[in-house]
Amino acid sequence: MIPQEMLLQKPIDLRHKCLFYIGHIPTFLDMLLSKAIGGSATEPAYFWNIFERGIDPHVDDPEYCHNHSEVPEVDEDWPTLETIMEFRDGVRARLAQLYEDIESGKQALTRNIARTLVMTLEHEGFHVEGFMVPPWKALAEQWKNTPLPATPTVIIGSTALTMGHNDSEGDDAIAEFEYKVSGHEFGWDNESPLRVVHVNAFKADWRPITNGEFMDFWQGEGKNVVSLPKSWEVVGDEVMVKTMYGPVPMEYAQNWPVLASYDDLTAFAHAKGGRLPTEPELRLLLDTYDVGHEGGANVGFRNWHPIPATMGLGESGKGSNGGVWEWTSTVLQDHDGLVPTKLFPGYTNDFFDTKHQVVLGASYATIPRLCRRTVRNFYQHNYPYAWVAGRVVYDI
Image (cartoon, rainbow, N blue to C red; front, side):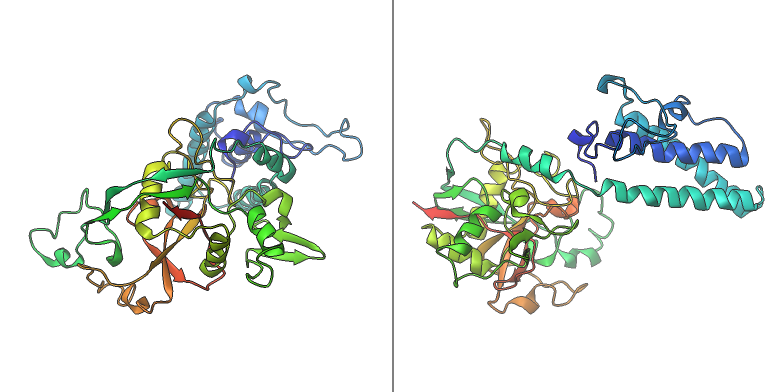
């Protein structure tokens, strides 16, 4: 919920830096456990001094504030996130031991202990809401200043491309393979088998189509051609972008990739003189320039919304697409060697209906293990609710 770069920032001027609350929640629990059952502070004990109590200054006069902990004045004096996490884990272990002792009868469950457990649980629950107020204006200013690639496009290929992997569900019942689990990469039926295809040279936009670009198209050349994306909504006279926090003004999200149907993004691409990429083309582009989860891409809830794409910067051009799946022009269909799964009958082959497009990549909400390069997702071409964006490519 808190990006690394924001740990020592104060997105809400009437509250502490974000890092404080990561330390405050387990400190509150540790202090109340000691009151209820005795025992000394979990190390480092000085956390009780800096993390005991937050601030709630008067909105009209922030100089007036109740008694609170004295926190470090400079960033360098704050404990590291790693140290706080170790402390948190120690406090949680202490709590787990208390539950074990109550369960075994070693510790009687008194009203005081029960009240402590309820209070500390609900205290943490209250604080969850405090983390869910993004500093939209500050973030929008930061995103607006995100540099653009030196050139808007990149030429890729021609080359041979390896797609898929070898994961046979049928091997599970063969004695030779039955217990060979370690190191094996499991997948869905449409990921197999491994195969090699040729990709002709093509030119691609470094970044997916943005909300701002699509809004210009929707209001202009694409008027009465494309629909208002389901990821947007009109509030009064203003077009806003839906998020898990509620709708935000377009000015905040204009540089995010737009989430829209394949049909509407295809119309945009054609108007720009291009098209959406084939599956092999997009796979090659992502293999070459996407940093992936381990490289810091916006997946696995690193942010709770898309962010501006960063591909095309630096010497390597590597970056993130902003935290979205991407449409391909490849229709989901059977391929040589695809063996339908028996564990989940119909998972892929029920959708060989010419209506579904293959999508690749990962959204900001995709769990990291689904970010492997062989994963293929699919949606109907006119389905408007998927978290899928589009990138324009061009024939050369």
